[in-house]
Length: 428
Image 1: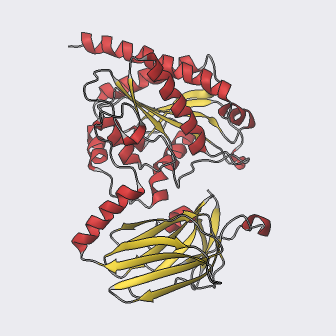
Image 2: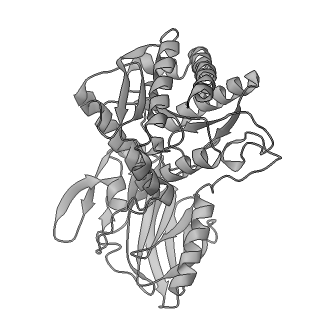
Image 3: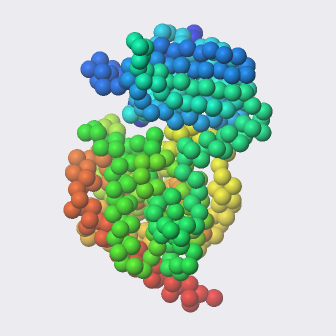
């Protein structure tokens, strides 16, 4: 993730832009988000002015832009905040902008959260809801304007607005829908279908791009293409039902992915990712299969799990308030059978994949990935390769490589579930 210079009043320090924007520091900060090269900056919308008007009952925030953009707004509590997710913007605003606000907005901060995405965060004086968030066309000599209208509410109403905002911003937990057999997070497997359920999880999505190749390919797109192809291949066999945690460019929090697996009583959970290494850390290549472990198998696995576990911070989710399912799972991890099944599937998958794809020199690893913590669902996380490696990247974007590798994963799924049925049937 790129480091951006964060200008505070009295001191200057470097932090990760995404971590900064999700922090709860009480003072407002203006983030210098201009790209280093002016030629690159021209490709992004420019924010040239900002105004805050209103009082403690109603407040309006206006940001002048040189073109229209999309905006998504939601609220966060403890402390009270409003978050605006927008495409990458060059903030050409005076120094000190955001140090103080007006009305319901005590202060605000802004900046680049990741390549392609910017964020504005309001620190509120009390509970409030977003009544409107929209962008106006340029007209009558006036620029395009992003407008956010806030209204004061009591704490109970704020909680209701927060819940409603999360449903708009994020995909809700899937529910049974007989009209949708296996269509991603918008539907679930049919209740009258007794076939085993396989949940395929395409990592990242939405504002969270995941890793990114130097040539621009984003992990979230690579893994979604692979996940869809795997879904199609498994469904074609007719033996299993498939549920996707996401089937489009949508952000799904880690706890929600775990819920999807558990609520569908999945027989198997497969999370698809693609790794990257900074140049200073050398080069690595090949696919790696991870299972859950309290202790990471090596430093690289530990670092990767830490990075993946922070994915929720991209969307402003408070990681200290994990869903009850995850909290319960931390206790229930003593159930060794699920880990045994997960490890068994990982070995079978590695054996199948090595026949068609390049594998990492240590293809089987383990670490504390939150997305694998469904205590009653065998789960693995597959890193298909390294987008930072030229040869791996060439494979990752190749339809021929994808087709062959998808076939190997589907074969491992078929072999694993067959063996598990036999094992379950003979156990006492």
